[in-house]
Image 1 (cartoon, rainbow over the protein chains, first blue to last red):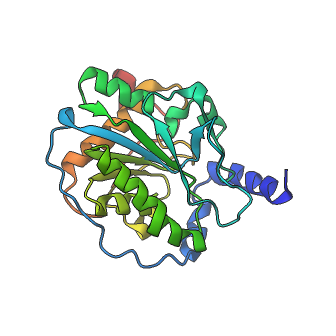
Image 2: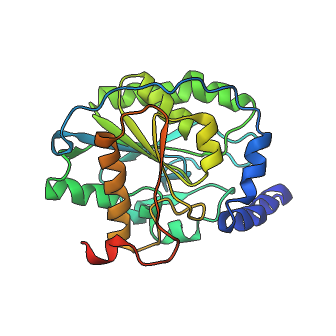
Image 3: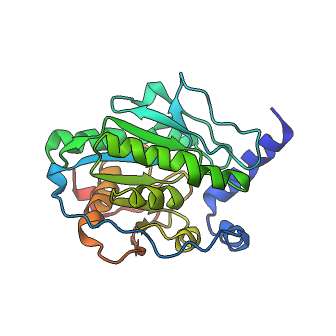
Length: 171
Length: 90
């Protein structure tokens, strides 16, 4: 393993336990002024809604290519998680947080089993056919690509798959 | 993650985001967010704590119905590895 990846993982272990440490890092980030949040009113009943999950925890199918950890600005691409995917089919590629617990139970970052239970119980109408996963550590030049290409691509797929609402989960 | 939430909402789908980094969420301003003072990598809580995971996911879904102010961040009161209201629920 490259030295910088090892170093990232060591930092990840510390930061995962002490999120307050990252507040300073966040203050230094030169994020473009976000502007007012977009807003789509939610009118439907949850019991009629098809719900999709989007995570930035670096989850993907074993059979998919892992996220690129060699680029220090991260990887703005995404992976598709099929509706029926469960723990044995999934893994996590992400050096910037401690995912040992999520490796054991992916539901703490991508609660797909819980969502399926809600659909089964009638609390929600249905589970969307696909869910989407990014690697949350995206910086520098890749933010532009995320905003111009990969995030809109996911949004269009969710529209096409008739998702009524989306729950997003970080790492 | 907030950036992805904003993009999806801009395309016409309501979103709700869990957050475990409040400062970042304040900066990025996703449409609806619920903040938990929990360690990174644990937005739904602890592994195999099914009732806890259900509780948090349910709170997120209900926030879609209840939040009316764009950019609002709800601070969930739950403490890490302490009993919560989910201990009595299924």
